[in-house]
Length: 272
Image 1 (cartoon, rainbow, N blue to C red):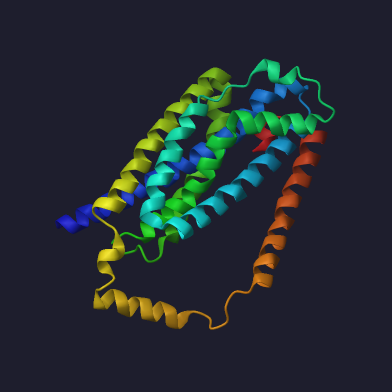
Image 2 (tube, rainbow, N blue to C red):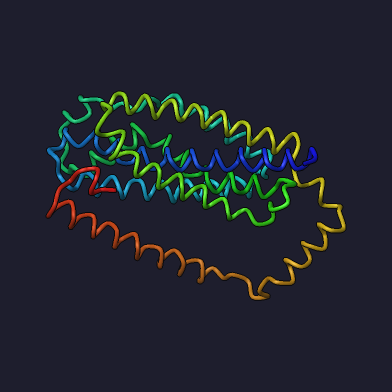
């Protein structure tokens, strides 16, 4: 195995672990924070339903930020800015729910849930929501042999999501207090900062793909990719249709969640 192979394997490992950790933290924090606010609101099923709505909205906002930030600033510049944003989110951690937030008079409890979630975990969750698409974009701009098609990294993301969802009701909730859960999640976020920094270091120092642009092989691959593209551009109407269609499974999820948590129980196991 030569040096290039070692570098390639190291790059693959770093990016895969980062995406895995990002996804695990993303899915761990959802039931954890909802469980934190549940006792203050009487165990109502609306707590999880509004939480789910909040997390879906922020997930969409995170994807939008990842797309626009990279498009406007470029991959290398935006990577450094994103690292600063990831580090700044530490200001809001560990996640703590203040009792006095629930003593304020409100006409609509749903608005209170959204406000508490936004103040307590909104910014860290937004940062995590943008992590997976951004890291894949960074990997696509490296000189790794499979960087032209980085979507296999979704396997690491999906695995991290599943591990996070399974770990919460089977390990974290039964054996750790909410304070311990928050601290453990915080330590995981610190590890994510370190791995994100490693991804950006690799992107800047060793593997940025701009060095390949003058390569005949790279140019040939780009021409082949361009020839496979549909000559018909993706229209604005089609984009709107995609967004509207995405509302269907989201609304079904919220509806089923409301039904189950109302007729069975509002608890993390059923949320998951």
